Image (cartoon, rainbow, N blue to C red; front, side, top):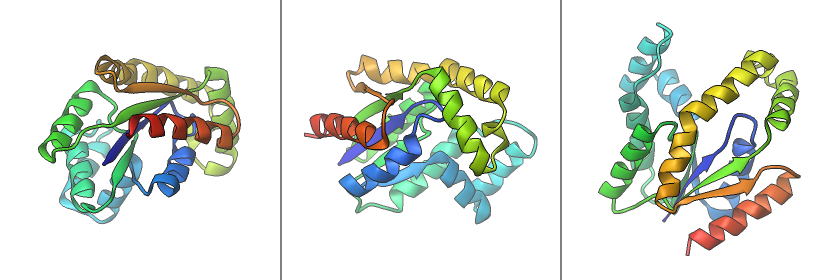
Length: 192
């Protein structure tokens, strides 16, 4: 089974590349944003719990996020693997993911980080903001803050997997096809 963590700052192209990787490797894409929308939209117990935190402007606890992720993985036992997008964001979440996969005699195959310079990320997000309807993609100061939060909160996750010799960096500049080729090269290398 291939279990990939697709990692990178907002605007690095994770969603675009994940959809191509799903086709190439027949993996299931699990985006935490999609999980939240599904669970809250269907008013599940975890969705209700998440709403209670979000409505107060609080962060949803790891236990709720991890519960949603476990539900999704457990509901799809026959897929050949998963692409985790937007998770884990903290070392605690990484440890919980490792423990959960270990309970299924599985493990993370690799964390693959898309590296993109800040100027390029800002440009991409502002461009996306013209059509996405997302306010956080239209304001450069908000974008810069998101990038700083990403660096401070999620860089330790890369370090956590790097210490285990499971982290890889991929140049996230260039065309979608060029980046995809680089990603496939790394996946083909680690998935043997």
